[in-house]
Length: 332
Image (cartoon, rainbow, N blue to C red):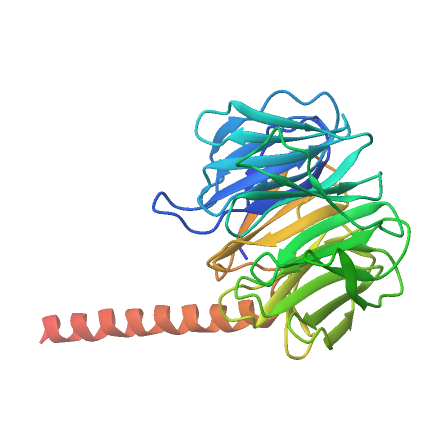
């Protein structure tokens, strides 16, 4: 890993990041911060595009729809907002009775899922924004994360004050499965192909089968981690970030650490792979978003840097040998 692209702009800790899928205009990155102003960036370069202004409290969660046309944000000001991602205009504000911690667009982009301190999972119809939301059951705790899966028929949620992941069937409004974890799940990600669920709880990263909900792999991390993300194209690596301020990269099959990115000056609250797997981003207590490009050389990645150095030295030797032979020919 080379030096990251450091994205400044937030004045308080960055607590959530999310990518859009690849669109005809590229892919985009949104970040949520306690400074109350979500920011939109070019997902490849990190260049600032715009700031969504209107919240009056910390923004805990953010999301982009699959076309990157709209953004969503969940805030401590008791609202979730929908934004026009092209103009930055607020399209709608959904009132809640307490802090909203999580939000997610449905795959078909017609619905918004929210959860928070009220312990209620809500589904808002974006085609009828003034209609009352559908409320899904009662959560056993304060909601920390929400995600969609199974073509928007199942909802995943976790709590801040109790362990486990809960899976809700939106047709029956009931919990149909519980994935057991020892500690509260602080990060949950459904893979791009819908096959895996990646979770972080305590100092553990777990991978679950998204269809039969079996636990596939569980790895102990070097420290308590707050977020984890699986490489989306090949699924052969994953990243995790947490209290030690570093972003760690691991082999999915073995759990062996294959890279470590140092640069943040505070705990890492969120990490996500870009949709093509060519880079990943991290957000930290230090108020910065950093984009790390996969495949460039970094002295931190000792497994690869020595090999690269040897290859470089071999290239130099061959070049010098070629120049010497050319001079010999000229002399003759």
